[in-house]
Length: 402
Image (cartoon, rainbow, N blue to C red; front, top):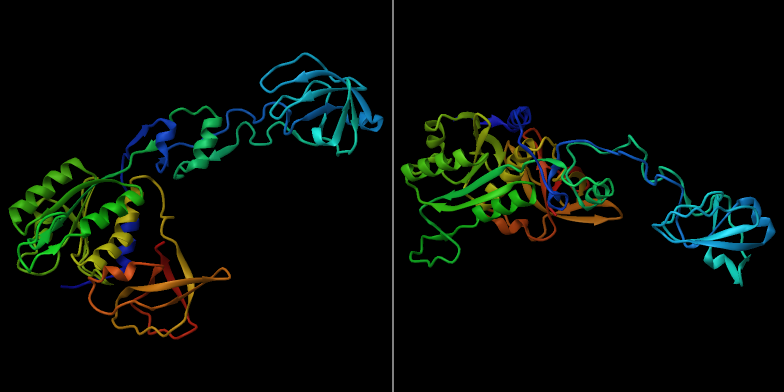
C-alpha cells in the first residue's frame, strides 16, 4: 500500500468545498460558540447624542473661569429635559444622561462643593471632559463583526446593543461518532474477559467535536461485524454531516471500515498518509457528507482528529482554523527523528518571559496508544517528513493543546 505525503493530504483537505452551507437564525444568547453567517454593521451612532460619562455638572467650558455657577435643573439618565445651560448656570447631570443643550463639558461631583443653589468649582477640567461624543462607541455604517466570526460574549453584548434579536449563523455540523472493535467495553459495562478493554476514543472524539464547534451524536461501540458496521455507518451518514469512526481502517482480517466506505458509494479523498501517529487515516466523501475514519489507538485517533476533523468541522461554518495554535518553541533537550514521516510528538511546554520552550519530561516512549502523554501542560512537536533530528536550542514548531 502506497502512503501519501502528509502535505498532500492537508492540501486535499484544504481544497474541500462544501456547497449550500446550512444557516439559521438563533436567539441571540443561544448563538454563543456559533459562527456568524452575516456581517454585523452598525445601524446607528453609539451614542447618538453627546452623553455624560460621569455624575457631575454640565457647564459651558468658558464659564469655568467664574468658579461659581447656579444649579438650575437636574438631568436624570433616561429623561429628556427642556432646560438649557446658559452662561452662569449648570445642570446636575448623571452617568448616561444626554448632555443638556448649551453644555459642552462635565465637572465631576468630586471637583465641586455645593453651596445652596450653587456649585463652587474646586478643581478644573479640560474642555469636553467626561462627555461621550457622538459615535464614540461606533458610528452608523461601521463594520463591527464580520461574517465568519465565532461568537463570544463580547459579540453578544455588541449585538444586543444594536437590538439584534436573532442573528444569522451557520448551523453546527452534526457529527456521528462510533468506535469499532469486539474487544471494546462501554462505560459502566462489566468486564468478562481479560482481552476486553475500555472504550475511550468515542468519548475523546465527542469532547473534541463539542469543543471545536460541532454537534456530537454519540453512537458508542459496535463489534467487528461487517454487516453491523455497514448498517450503522449508512444510517449515520443519512442523518449527519460527518461520521467519525475509530478502528477498522488498518489491514487486519477484521478491519471492515475501509471496505464499508467503498460499498456505501463514497469517494475516498485519501487513505494512508505518511504521518505518525495515524498513518491509516482515511477521509471519504459522498455529496456534502463525509466519513473520517481514524485509527483505533487512543493517542493516534486523538491526534488525527485534531489534524483532520477540526478543519472539516470549520468548513461547514465557513471559517478557518483558529482553534489550534501553532507556535515556535526552543528545544530544551535533543529530539531524535525516528521515521521518515511527518510526526506529532507529545512534549511538555513551558512559557517563560513570553517565549515557549519544550522538553519531553514524563513523556513515555512506546506505541500510539499512550493517551496519558497528552495530560498536563502538553503540546505536540511537529516535524516534517524531510526534517532530521533536532538539538538543544533548535527552534521548532509546536501545536498547543491547552
